[in-house]
Length: 78
Image (cartoon, rainbow, N blue to C red):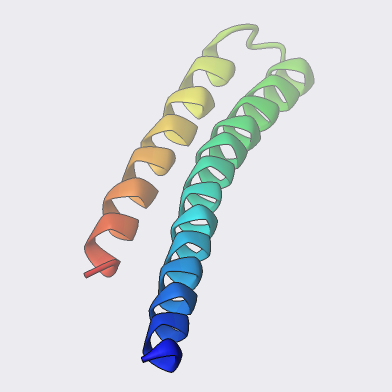
């Protein structure tokens, strides 16, 4: 009976760390996609002189990418 309890405890521990890794992955991916969008928009605005226009466009694209990633991630985790 002790071996079964040990196996259950290991199972709970690994599921906790898997959930922690999944949440970390989601958070990092959201932040990275928004950051890349802002960085590209700001860089292209400085290069082309189109002040806030490209920053807004690429920021929205970054947010859209983050939302798409969250939906795709939730579909893949069944």
